[in-house]
Length: 65
Image (cartoon, rainbow, N blue to C red; front, side, top):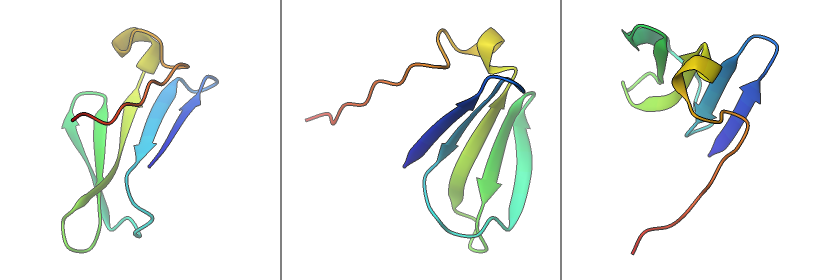
C-alpha cells in the first residue's frame, strides 16, 4: 500500500495494489475509487483533502489484533 499527498493540487491518494486501473468512479463527491479489470478497488483519491482530512500530510499505520 502506498499513500501520497500532493499539496499543490490538494489530493490524497491511497494505492492498494499495483494492478492497472481499468475504471475510476466518483463514489461520493470528491472521493474517487479506482477499479481493476475485475472490479476490485485498487486505489482511492480524496480531492480537496485539506478540507476533508484532519492532517493529510501525516499517516499513521497500525495492524489490529
